[in-house]
Length: 337
Image (cartoon, rainbow, N blue to C red; front, side, top):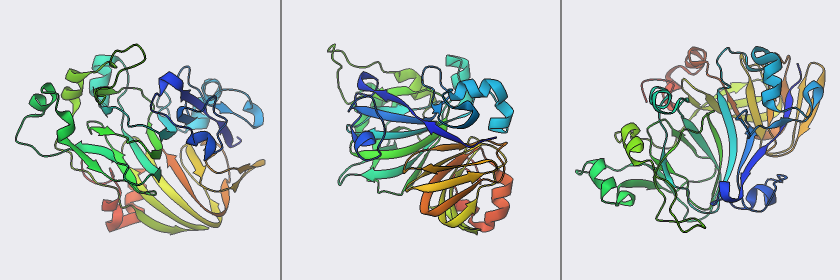
């Protein structure tokens, strides 16, 4: 099976009123207009499907290809398609949000929950993200009801290259002037706590989901940027950042030809031009152009001298064995989150 070179779907305009123009200007994306918040690099969401550009499935959406041979592509039997990969450009600050876990989301919304992670690609001076709740003597419910939620948010100033793990229940908001690579469960389960008092073109504020947000918030979460752990491999090294029950996130530090041998599908997004080869084919990827490596693809390698971001389904025991005592530097790999 071929490696899939993907064409993203975009969320833009009023769908992402906080979006900017950097996906087009800096990343060379063929975005439909200047204000684009999200480039959905690998997506099987209904109405927001990314498209395969090469091989036997050229011109078909990922969802159409999955209908033909789900297990050969994913390497797993879990349905629906479990992961979603985005690039985000926040010109303005996003709303304060929290995502539910699977159990709550299935019970209340009939969909899976959402855990995600950000790799910071760019951050303007002074930009910030909300990342968790500060300790307080006041109950969170009282703070929220008083309309003073901003006072309880923990803010950090991100830097390019940093990785932030956002498990379900973690209150967060991406700040203006920040661009990120986001890997997440394939779900739109989001509860909005606060939108900074903004109103839409109709003069009305966006809908909030206060009670659901309070229900799922884990105020005790005390997280920080993820240090990661690096292992030498043929053709360079790999820095592992996250490996929980939903996804594995890593950076490939390519210095020549690096074999990519995954048990399940993997997504590769290079930060510089590179070559991907496999049995029966090859492709040149531009910076920030994503390839999906199906589980059934054979003898896949990436070639060049560059960093590339990579996400796949987790192999926790294998990674624990590989990293040994350094596994504690990988979010979600040891202990409960």
